[in-house]
Each structure stands twice: as C-alpha cells, then as structure tokens.
Picture 1: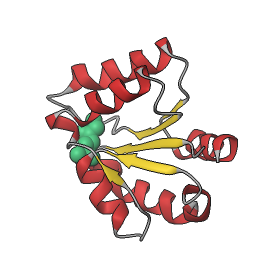
Picture 2: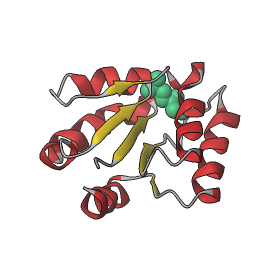
Picture 3: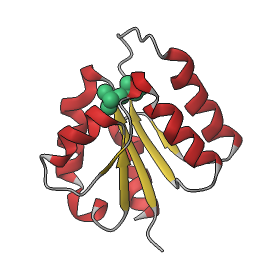
Length: 121
Ligand SMILES: O=C(CO)COP(=O)(O)O
C-alpha cells in the first residue's frame, strides 16, 4: 500500500518546499502525495502528482489533520514560516496536536523532512 505524505508550506517557505520536492521527486513518486491548495499548486509545477486539499487558511490544515486522525496520513512535512503571523494559527496548532495524539511523524524543516521521506518511502 502506498504511504500518504502531506506537504504543506507557508508562503515564506514555498520556494523551499518546491526545491525540497525537486530534490526528492523520485522518492516522493513512490507515495501518495497530498497538499494544502496553494502549496500543492506550486508542487504540481514540478511534475509530481499531488492531491490538492483546500488552501490552509480555508481549512486545508484541518482537512489534513482529520485524515491523520483517521490513520490516512502517514507523514506530514510542514515548512512553517517562523517569522509569519497567520489568521488560521488555531488550525496549525490543531494539526500539530493531532499528529502528536496519533503519533504521526511531522517534520518542520528540510532535515527532518528528508528523514521522513527516507523512513517512509
Ligand atoms: O497556510 C498553510 C498552512 O498553514 C498553507 O496553505 P496553502 O498551501 O494553501 O498556502
């Protein structure tokens, strides 16, 4: 069964996410990739197949959290912008809480994101 990996990046980190996807595209092709809407539309430009959820501020983080709670997401790579402020901060915290509650690996930077890919794909 393919592992489902969620990719999410705040605006200040979207370029980093695209570079990360390009660096790991062959590994990522082994999984089922989902992403929040805007992040996903950038990732699609790399040629990687991505299932798009809603944009983060419109509920995309919450959708991914719900899937994680149902055991349908096996790893989350979430490049947060430590300098940004977000109207949907409660959703972001909820996603992180759910990943801890259900023991779903969640990476917040390139180094740990690489470990998730190497461990799961
Ligand atoms: O806001 C986000 C995560 O909290 C990301 O959402 P987008 O990928 O739609 O920009």
